[in-house]
Image (cartoon, rainbow over the protein chains, first blue to last red):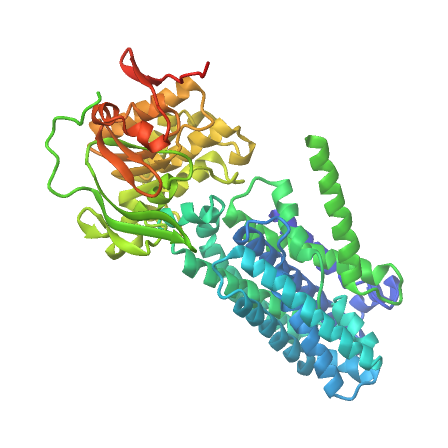
Length: 324
Length: 267
């Protein structure tokens, strides 16, 4: 865990110097207390690094909760329809506002789209929970999540087909981007992270008991219904906050808990603490790569996480196959 | 060994069921079933596959709500017990457990959840209970390994340790000896008998192996969805309850201090 913390600080430091301007300029900025350097380093790059860490941490936390709660190693934070709900809401929002790409992108930073994404994510989750008639049946939940994702995804595609103007703007949301994270976003994310992480750690004994099966957990005196409601609320809040600030960043929530489990022997409490730390570092690193590869332009960070995450999962698959 | 211990049964049975009916959808699993479990006894549930043994155990453990009927735990309705108090009194062992990534010690420690609560602060009494359970089942030697890396029989012994760590007076066990080699099956039988006779506890188990099942003090023989008989082992054998339950002649022979099922091979 210390490694994750050190990694986060180190990457935040490095990320100060990577961007559209060259490395040398960035280094000079650090020494000269000019207004421009202040703006770029402290008002753009630093909040972006901090925000990226927080988004990654929220996704890592969501992934750890989802994988333990659903007792499924493929579970991820977007499982309950939050991503598709947010995407649809953002599309509707962009359509409602004037729809040239520039204004659309400008809106991404504002509360309009962010708020819409949050509402959409929450609505998507609510829809999933309604369809599955509560939270007690894991199979129903997963099925309802799949249905909601497909139907809302189809609606989103339909809207985008009708108005190709917002296509480009939507892409950056659908692929995830850390480019619009400012101090305000970072503060909001930090607040949500604190609100989610502390109860999650306190509930981790319940997650341990859940790994023995739901009946066994109940026989041990666990209030299973209340536990599920609480964990799903945390999962939903964490995911909705992350999606609203950075779009749909894939794979981080899926991969972070696996990375932790592969490297150390963990119980649920350690996983709940380590997975966010790991997710934060992963997204920070992906953010750096996305800014570095095609300088001075940027890749959407979601493409980088998908490539890195996919490669990691394939590696994991091979290692497992070898072991058996 | 085939009759109930001489100590007089207390007025209130530790567990009693009245007119239990359990249905899954339109399928009736238990039909108007009533029974009293005796304290200080090991009771075996015997019956053919699918007759509702597991469902009966789960219902007695409070994990399935019966459609009709009621269960009393120590004379008080099971529903009226606070969650953790119930968990301290009745412990349940499932037929199979999922392979957990927890270490053996963490897994067995979960048996103390009703005592330690969410934060899991173990007091010396909890540590001692965990230690006793690990030693009794022989799981102590793998206490730092992950449960998922153990063999089926080893996992079964860890589950049993998890059950014993609760230190509940009533133990409900669904196939506790599956996956175990014969010497370890006997170890389990010894633990169960000690719990019933030595600690004045109560055991209800469903065990497939007739030789082990008939080591109990009493038997509940189930046909489809209901009881064929409930009594001492000799009552069950004299009344030929087993043949009625399985719908085919079941030939049990006495062998040394125990019983064996002797199949009649058709010519």
